Image (cartoon, rainbow, N blue to C red; front, side):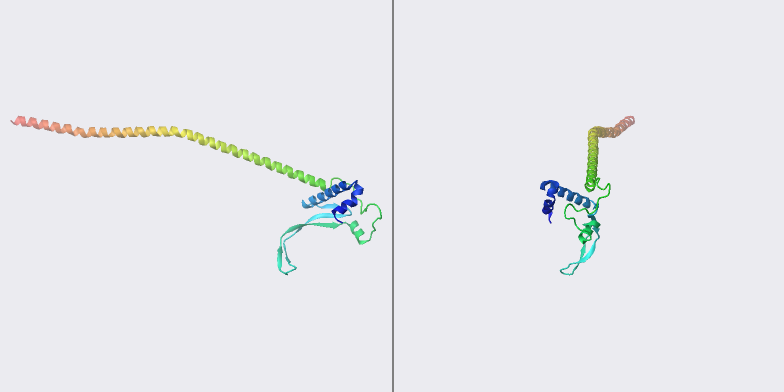
Length: 212
């Protein structure tokens, strides 16, 4: 029996083929999602579906006999319930008409279930994603503010720089002016000995006149 045949088998009991197809899809989807997330789906009297982790191991290629390393993996596993086993083994007989009742579900086991658990897990993931997105957005805003502050500080420093340059230029010009005026003083100092030589000449003239 394939999926289409399963849908046809329950179509009359659920009110039509469309309703039966949707019911089968919802049941299988709930089971698969729960097992993938690591949960155990147990149907009393029928069996349980669960995820089993297989560690890394070595196996042999059946064609070549070569030893091959198999990576760690996870596989789904189904374990039949005792009522299902009894019907298959023949210790219990299938009823001719009506539905097979392997065993009644215990009280409280029908409230919630795998689908409800899957929905809760999905809601938690969505909340976590939203929180992570909010954190990233806040971090981006903080980074943008820091960058803007650094840019403003650089602009302020750049504006202050010309004032310092002007002051430096003034100081340099003053030093140059002082340097230019310094040689004049030296020249004046050099001219001073000339007066002494003139005084000597005058003394020599006076001495000559007296001798005469």
